[in-house]
Length: 134
Image 1 (cartoon, rainbow, N blue to C red):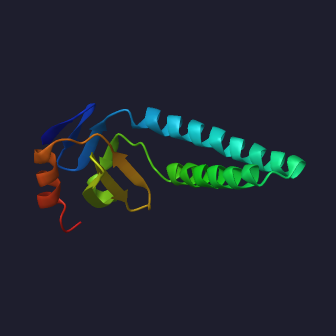
Image 2 (cartoon, helix red, strand yellow; image 1 turned 90 degrees about the vertical axis):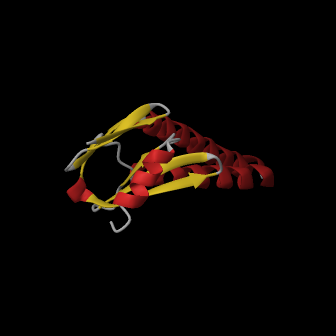
């Protein structure tokens, strides 16, 4: 059993499962709430365009509304499981976007478990060594 610290939480690789302790559920609900509110704002902007004819309202409403609707749908396809069986794992990859490092655990049911705030070089080396072929 191997345990690694995250910035907020920890991840443990046991013999047959991965155990993750983080605030993923809170992050998911915050993203869903925020995206739904921005999508509603975009809809109201488009409706205001229909009333006033102002092109700015149309284009900003479409961009904001569709962009956040896309984020909302992507968030629905993520999982927040804290225990994942290794039999259910398709792949584990360490990624970096800007200065943020995170793990993407792709499951066989095509869902994604993202572990954010990873700043542990030992964990990244462990992933590269043990999950290279998965």
